[in-house]
Image (cartoon, rainbow, N blue to C red; front, side):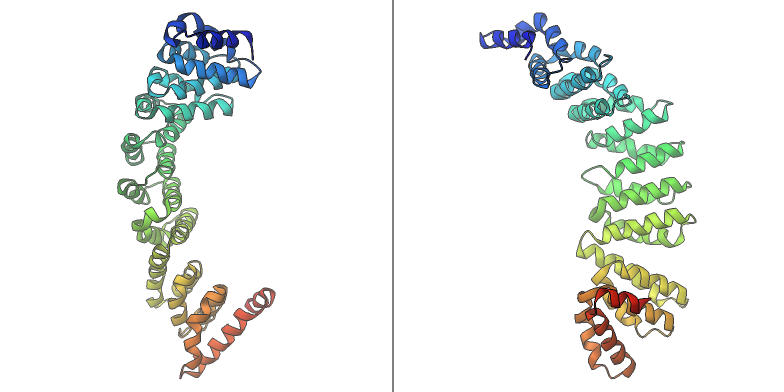
Length: 351
């Protein structure tokens, strides 16, 4: 531990109040931030936190230091001071684009620790013409508390820049808790004119899992009707992420695919089979019914999907062994045998 820090600690032990010592000691603490010894630097950070508001201005200046360790440690210290360091928020926002990732990360965490006090600086950054700065400000805003959410939603809805709308949709997928307001904004974004925005909205809805239950029908429609193939896939992936959240959401997704089984077009019913296979046991009632489909290809795929469910499918198949319809009885016995067969044999049979 270096001499400056040792001196400061000795004065503290002797009873000097931190505030009275601040004027003569802050610069020594600041200099200790560039120490190669991590323990000394951390001690200096702790002392600066104790000094509080008197340390903020020199720490702001340290955010411009050529030494990235000093910049990182200054950001960490400002974060630990918290809302009391709000005057440094604009400087921390600029550090979100620091060439060193460690500094970016420390600046982002510091803004998060400031909470609501960081929002004015982040909002100002969102008015920038620099897309990169706007993106990182959006990310930071999503972690700075509920007061930032309406700002992000407004950007998603109204910003003229496609890149920013897509990033706003992505940022909302990280906000916790996921409110109804957030889910509704993302559902609206599934109708955005730009496929990148629609795709980002679907990704976020998927990440939010069970909270996105009310988005199941819009995502289901997007998975079938979006004009962009990647956006359709993202909507489909989001559906299965939501389905995997709880039994309730799994059943809700299965019911959406089950509605397709009433369609006259066999190709649509095949599409439903593939969707039902991905929701596991919740799709079994519809797959069992599809064994009787008038189209042979649909019936075969339904059987394959049932086998893919594995042991979970056995209770649903057992009643069919007593069916008065010979075809169904044979199919049930065949599928039960396949489920009981080794994995490699089931795969060969399916091929």
